[in-house]
Amino acid sequence: MNWIYDPWPWYIGGPMIALILFLLLMVGKNFGMSSNLRTFCTLCGAGNASSFFKFDWKAHRWNLIVVIGAVIGGYIGAHLLSNNEVVAIHPDTITDLKNMGFESAGSSYLPTELFDNAIFTNPKTLLLLSIGGLLVGFGARYAGGCTSGHAISGLSNLQRPSLIAVIGFFIGGLIMIHLLFPLVFTL
Amino acid sequence: MKTFTYLCIGILFGITMYKSEAASWFRIYEMFSFDSFHMYGIIGSALGIGITITYLIKRFNISSFYGEKIQIPSKEKGWKRYLIGGIIFGLGWALTGACPGPMFTLIGAGFTPILVVIIAAVLGTFLYGLLKDKLPH
Image (cartoon, rainbow over all chains, first blue to last red; front, side, top):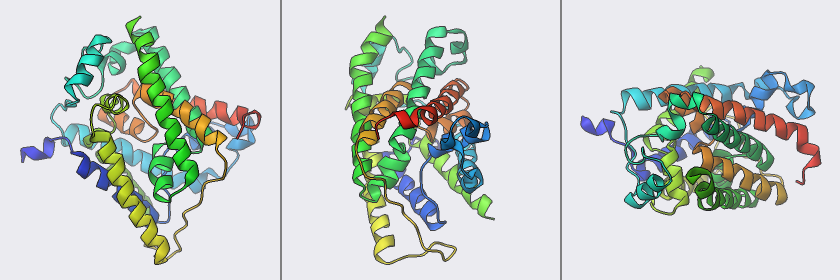
């Protein structure tokens, strides 16, 4: 039974994502996680600041339930189906990351340099996580979707706008990792 | 009953994100470094099956479990918002290693600092709502 604690290979993970897309379509919904961030804004009263947030959030209640499920699923995945999971990334990636000061590369699930509770007293890391989050939220809504809405649902429906968005995701990701990381993390 | 169904789909999604390591910052970094096939395999196989499913649903007019017609909306035409918004999203995705689904999975997995990313992402969405009419789309 030890296999149950092992990480899933790509050929399990990918088809499972397709199954989730299928199930959502079959219950009459569409796969798109970032629209929840907009619903959160509306729930916080953002409708007073911009008409963009004036919509019937109850029509999106189902997606908030999916999010609650995603939190529970994270708990189950990490605490019931895993044994202190270490992500076995490529040795070259580990070397690169160690050179930038990520000592936890190859020995944890997330880098402790960014996601350990100790970061709450580290202004630089707090700033980096905040900037990253802002970019994710702003960019996802500007592009009209994120990885689930464009890279999975949109491309599955052969939408050209989604292809443009996914190309954008990659341009942004490559700039961040190859041009900005060496500046940000070696200083 | 419907609420329970959505919850179960969400749980399945959360487990998948965690166990496939798509929720790991390291896997996102590795993907953008082109060092491993893992993330490409996940997205590629999900897409291959997704295209087939979407095609079959449209081709055979398959109805939902509740007997309703399945609506798959087309994206609005244009390119500016997709390219510029996409690049901004990509910068944030690579920095935080988390997209808007997995970030919730990581709360459940017990990584409290991800809350900083989530709050900032909600603020980023709010900022877009304020600036929307001034941006090229």
